[in-house]
Amino acid sequence: DAKTTQPNSMESNEEEPVHLPCNHSTISGTDYIHWYRQLPSQGPEYVIHGLTSNVNNRMASLAIAEDRKSSTLILHRATLRDAAVYYCILSFPGGGADGLTFGKGTHLIIQP
Amino acid sequence: GAVVSQHPSRVICKSGTSVKIECRSLDFQATTMFWYRQFPKQSLMLMATSNEGSKATYEQGVEKDKFLINHASLTLSTLTVTSAHPEDSSFYICSARAKGVVGGYTFGSGTRLTVV
Image (cartoon, rainbow over all chains, first blue to last red; front, side):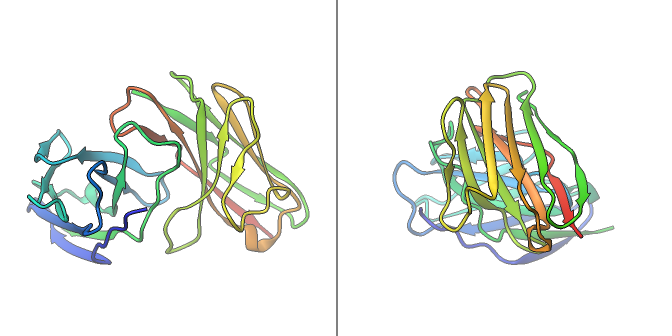
């Protein structure tokens, strides 16, 4: 599986934008970039995914580098409820035959 | 959207007993379900993949006789931890692959197992 690298933790203030980086230099042409997040004592939840173009949804935006070797998850206005571990994962869009491979993710801390 | 219900949310059991965890897809049929384990401060590790009506496929290092998986219907998969020991204490999470769901995977809320 292509691997991703994320910072262990990041800290931000409430109501400010947050940019969570992810490096995936060995990404293949068919890999989609997925982001999931895990709130404390919960199962992961889907955030966003993309292939080449930047993507927006009600939760976040995903900015993908032109060479696809890195991406950034953008939370436009962080709230305390966004405090979670964010995982950047490479996968097929509809889910492959395999489960997702989770790295260590980025622990996002939001200060009030 | 696709919802996966996982029960119980937490369970405490005595060493040597067995515990069953249920994972149900509420509004869709899940032909494939995945079971993960997560130790404190660590990431999720895939334990096994179960397909409805067939034997589960276990990841390397996961004992299939200890972690029994049954996927008897398109909406229910169960994980039974047999002869549990304190080292089996962990957070167990199920996931289902759902067609038409953005992102493809939906997760249960997890089960905190404590073996005393």
